[in-house]
Image 1 (cartoon, chains in turn green, purple):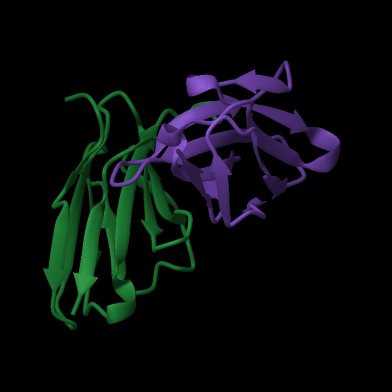
Image 2: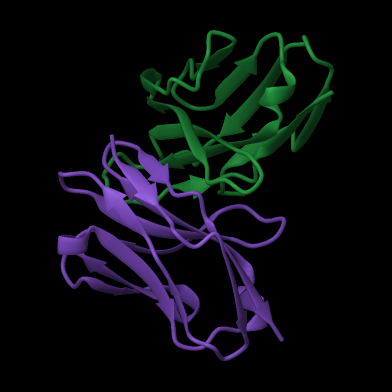
Amino acid sequence: DTGVSQDPRHKITKRGQNVTFRCDPISEHNRLYWYRQTLGQGPEFLTYFQNEAQLEKSRLLSDRFSAERPKGSFSTLEIQRTEQGDSAMYLCASSFPRGDYGYTFGSGTRLTVV
Amino acid sequence: AQSVSQHNHHVILSEAASLELGCNYSYGGTVNLFWYVQYPGQHLQLLLKYFSGDPLVKGIKGFEAEFIKSKFSFNLRKPSVQWSDTAEYFCAVRHNDMRFGAGTRLTVKP
């Protein structure tokens, strides 16, 4: 499989618990992005990495959210003390740095906080 | 930062009707423009993109889009829609990272 992989596909958690998602990008892509998508909305930018460096974080990314890409390959997104408002689809994408390249998206992780 | 507006929230058409979905962006510098499609239960897929040259770009499945710089617009068109085009369509603009519009849900009635 040469696409972007995300794990798990679905996660149901109780409010207050911590969750961690994983994204494996296309191996040749050195940029990796995290987005959040809620029903009826477009993907909202959260953060992105170039190799292992986190270059930008959205204001949407509160202190409860942290993302890492320690070796410049896969990335993890952790949400601490989950809230019901965190329920969403979390999307990962990867690309080359050049602006004329589109992103390749994964299938997403659907988080439900109960 | 760049932003994207899609004015049509939900469009309903009959098969064979023509389609035009509006997209306007705000950013003063050089941007690259994209349309993505999300079929029910599937991930986002690239329909087409513009980065330079001919402002009329053709994508997959008979879709095309026209970049009008003076209007900051990048509208998506298809001359004759099919039932299988039922999906959510997202316009996006990329400078450093990509920002998406809220999406337009297209329903094509058979």
